[in-house]
Length: 187
Image (cartoon, rainbow, N blue to C red; front, side, top):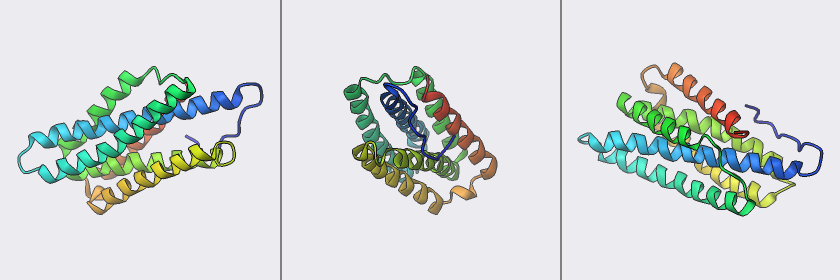
């Protein structure tokens, strides 16, 4: 994944095609994030004494659901199809969420930190790219990025880096996020 701004391709329709890529991949990312939190909540809600983390996960999911709803609107307005892999990202996100929750609260936080770190860089590149071409969308993405950074910082404060196998877990999740971004822009 390249976090640097991508210059528009030359030719008619190139900017519209790039906007479609941006909206498609960001929609896919928010869809995956909602599912990660749903998977984590499914596990934590079923466990005794996990009310506090379940409530926190519900709050994080609500932020991501708001982002997803906005991208749903933008896809419709701009007549952009979502990624064809949405069913796969739903399942993968839920599985990642449930899997990290089964590993414990620190793994939940490690997952959040890993995902949000990749997303922050991804949004930063898009913001830089859109600042002059589409300042309104750049401003919205800046707001979303700031919320993602707050999620990441909260995860770090709550012990993300103390998760069992943190380096491996974080590395695998980051690599998966980068791959999903690259694929979702085009498929």
